[in-house]
Image (cartoon, rainbow, N blue to C red):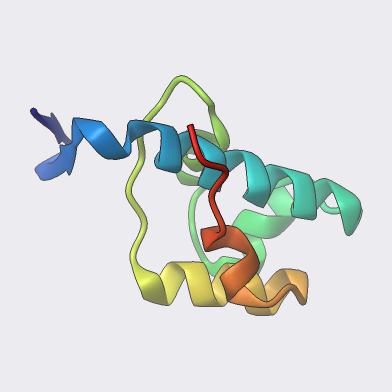
Length: 87
């Protein structure tokens, strides 16, 4: 099944991965002592975007460029965000 999200199509079978990705971003952001607002400013994104990415009940897709920017800003290797727990 495919779910439409703001003009993008997300595969339903990856929903858990989107959730895990957002939770990992939130975890590393907090570990580094940043607020969502600080992360948004550092990435030149709006606060609503960061909130949607981190929210466990919202499936918000991000580009690899954005993921790499987040990893760089938080000083975390990008691969750590893509290591998913098996269901």
